[in-house]
Image 1: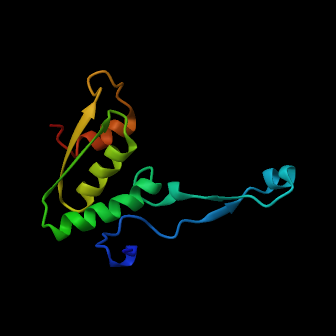
Image 2: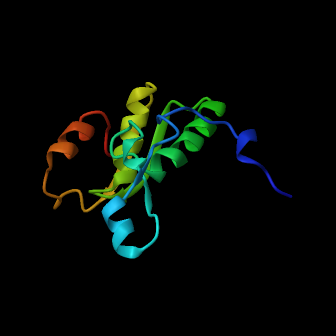
Length: 120
């Protein structure tokens, strides 16, 4: 049995579709046309495939009437970063279980997202 994505609950997080850019000089060097999909331009933090995946996780969370999101990862985790931003955007509490949080150097981006979530 196959379940299509269109039947799954989904919450919009990104600006889709993201653009394609041709790498003209590299294409010339390689002798073939080469294009890059710019998923870093989704509009949610660093974007990428993690924002796409989170749209479905949030859809399930809203379907279950959740008020909190919990995720785990390394202290510098892009997934944790985007989860915190998505939770903030939709008024949910984000709880991040971060491995190595005590030894991770604080970066500017980390300061921004750490204020909108509560590590547990």
